[in-house]
Length: 244
Ligand SMILES: Nc1ncnc2c1ncn2[C@@H]1O[C@H](COP(=O)(O)OP(=O)(O)OP(=O)(O)O)[C@@H](O)[C@H]1O
Image (cartoon, rainbow, N blue to C red; front, side, top):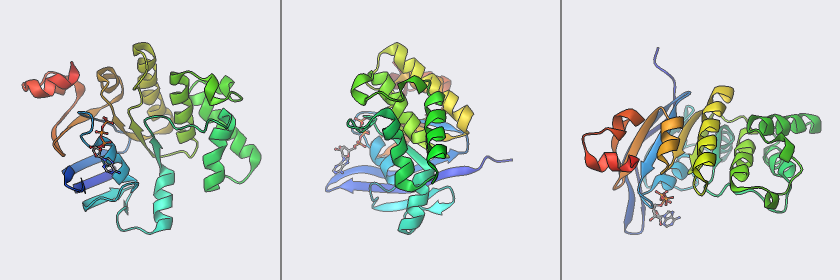
């Protein structure tokens, strides 16, 4: 049986003035799949993922997420989609003035995901346990290392039990060992929460560990697609170079 498609993007275009960033992007993400997206800095990877949750309005194309036509849905439907699609921003974006516990409670309160305080606390604890940082619950972001901040940001994404997670450069700025641990964590999260993910990264170790398939973006379109083994041994030097 064919796996369910949780994201379908067809012929997506986006320009900023005369800068044509996306020029006909096509992408399918299946339930349970981890898809890596690689490409040079500034090529449009983040613009694509922001279009998927409509943080950026594309110029043309179609986006379907979990059966909803994202570009035609109303505000309430869009909010439902955003609850089901966790977005892990590049910087992690924790609120510095809030403790880890408060950072994690924030999305629950904002979306009224659960209404009982005890239930909310349990969700906070289970999400922190999943990323291995339950003991950091009362710390402030300033007391955390870069790797810990990424884990906490992931825990905050997990709190709404997303069906899809969009990771924007999850290992950037981390040393090789910590990057490896975050990549392993991405795999563990998929197993534990049955999520599908798009992982934007320049980190070859991360794509090797965490993805099933990889797409390479150049000049606003995808120019290659395959597994890490396939692409890293591509007959085209221009593709192999992404894995150096
Ligand atoms: N809101 C915006 N307004 C104008 N230009 C934008 C906007 N968002 C992105 N861009 C431009 O679109 C291009 C693609 O940006 P994007 O952030 O998607 O790159 P990226 O591939 O994710 O890069 P990196 O790997 O460095 O994060 C860049 O030239 C950027 O300046």
